[in-house]
Amino acid sequence: MKNLIAVTILVFVYSSLYAQLPDAPKPKLDRTEWGLLVVDAGVRGLDVYSTHQALQNGNRELFLPHAIAGHVPAMAAYSGGTVVLDWYFARMLTRHHHQKWAHLLTSVDIGTTAPWAIHNMYLPKQ
Image (cartoon, rainbow, N blue to C red; front, side, top):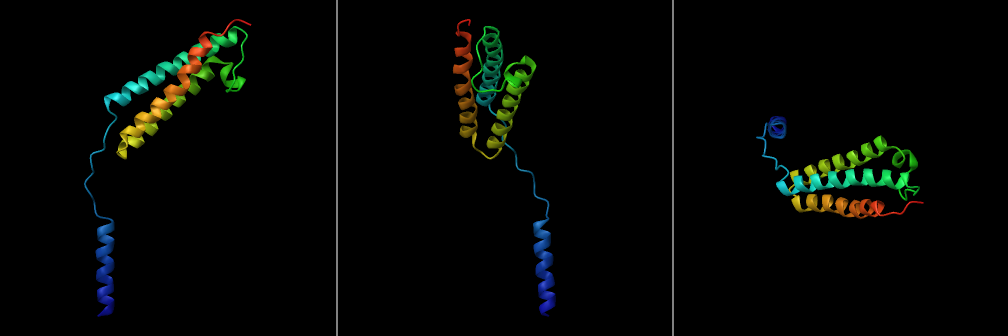
């Protein structure tokens, strides 16, 4: 009798663990986040351009190695990769119902990149 009860419990637990649950609707990125991602891509594009101009004028890059900053395609790939990572993490945060954190993440990236991109535009020729 004890074995029958144990088998019944195991069958019940097994069937409840592997039962098909309906898919819950997953939240998508809102217009604000898409707008922030577009601004982020624009700021990153400006950073690629301004870094190239600064290096052409004889200035040096402070943070990135020359292998990235010294080659426009490598810098564009790096900047594009950061925008893709921002999109990915914003999507993951939104799916876990943290839209404000997603907005903050993208805004911080914009806020840390834009001043340097603008700064590079005003560097004098060396």
